[in-house]
Every structure is written in structure tokens, then in C-alpha cells.
Length: 240
Image (cartoon, rainbow, N blue to C red; front, side, top):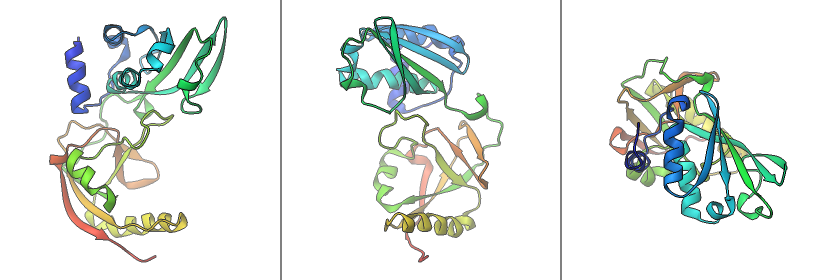
């Protein structure tokens, strides 16, 4: 059983794995209560659960506490999908991200947040062999952040309906075809930017998934440490 200190360490290190909520629901509830939440956790199955928050006005108006609430769940390996706002005996159901929760607190007695496993097909173990090395293309503007923090699926507001992914490809020689696709997408959206090519060293602990739309690559929801990222080429530009 993980202690509060261990959970904070996981948050700091950005280690995101999916843990079976059937085993860790008591730990999650204990730690949420330990920082001031009045909550109950309702386990639906090992891939889904909800967190009922009583007295929501307190924690929703405290930004750091609000963010930490989702960090705890994120580090368990789950993301929010929707939520119910209860007013007396009635409730409204919302898709997560549809509205600003903090602005809709009038007469709310409790909020129930629903969470689901990050990993597709409910896979908790890696069924794909993790390569020693793979490759990644990213806009040049991201270079400093990648060198400082590595690669992360977080972009903008992490608390969205679907979690973000990091995409990789197996063969370095495929980067030109991928660059064509990226530039075509940029062109259609009137975006002008150059790209960097990175080599990624994998530890084998990552959980990776096949992409049904691209057989030459894969994706992960896990963070990649900056020490495992090597810059191969910079300022790539291919005219479409």
C-alpha cells in the first residue's frame, strides 16, 4: 500500500501507470481525505470508478487542491470522463471539459466524477515488445521543453475527455514520409513551423500500444525522461 509521501513522490517524478482500482481504492480515498477532501469512492469495476466529492465549493475554489485531486487520480492511471452535479435530489450529467465547473457551484450538494483506465482495451500489461530505440518528430518550438522535461502526453489542459498520447515510429528512415504528413496538416491549418527528429531510448518499463492507423509506429501514455531523448536533426522542413 502506497503512503501519502510515496504518492507525492510519484506525482513529482511523473510516473504514470495504471493500477487496479480494486486493490488501491482504499489507498486513494485515504490520501484524498488526508489533504482535506470529503469523498467516497465507488468502484464500478477494475477499469472504472467514481469519486463523490461532498462540500465541493471548498475544493473547487482552491486551485492547488483542485489540481492535486486530479493528479492523484492521474497517477493511479485514470482520466476523468464525465461528472454529475447534484442539486438536492436531482442531478445533471456533463461530459468532462464541457463547462467550467468552478463557475457552476450554486446549490450543489456534491459532485460525482467518473474515471476510466487510460489504456485501450483495458490492458494493464504490455502485450507489445518495447523496442530499445524508436523515433519521434516534434515541432522545433517544443525543443527546450523536451530537453528540460522530456516527452509528456500532457498538453494544455490535461483534464480532457481523452488522454493525450506520444507517438513514435520504429525506423528512422520513415521520418520523411511522416514529415510530409505533418507539413500537409500544418498547411491545411495555415501553420508554419519546422520540426526536430529525436531518438528515444526505452527502458522496457513503458506500456506501449499499437496504432490501428499506422502499422510502422506505436504510442504511449507514459512520460519519457529527458535523459532518454537524443536530438538527431533540427529545423526540418520539407516543402509540400
